[in-house]
Image (tube, rainbow, N blue to C red; front, side, top):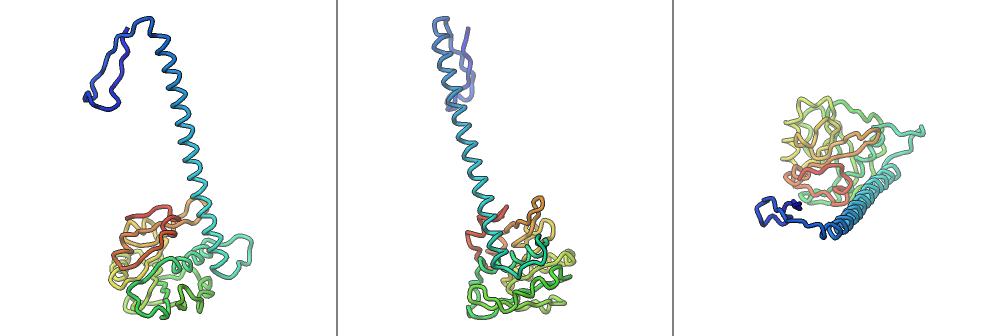
Length: 231
């Protein structure tokens, strides 16, 4: 009888190694195999426990961030359940608190949030007017054309602007604007912060490479909360 196995360190080039196994060695071999099974089980158990801990940690971080968004963001909702765009509006405000515009010389200058295309928020963004983020007063604009986008710090691109997306993304990169949208595959198409829906929960993705190319800095705490980061 032969004991057949592959070398673990690969030193033999992956060739099969055959070792003669005599009867008196069977008892010792079985005991070793039993020990190895127990060790493997314990390692798998510890690994799964570690994965579970990370899963709980990630969900807890997102839960805390969501609560902060809703508490610090906007006026209370009239119903018990906030609408999708109430959550997105709260996120939009908090995004401005975790992104830096290094090219801005005057840190007291207004921080201008522009919504281009059909406005999905309605009155939900109105509470942002006059609020401060990083010491800068928030202002809202609703440009009708690309010529009116000059001076925007945050550019929310609505779904009605899907055909103009490449032009808007290119302009935002040149002007150092933070782009935000809920268009499908937004960050893959060059956008910076994209809303995504996981079940009934609103989450977000980040294209760090696009933000960096535009001269923006995204806080590491925001990166940790994203469901996906393109670097």
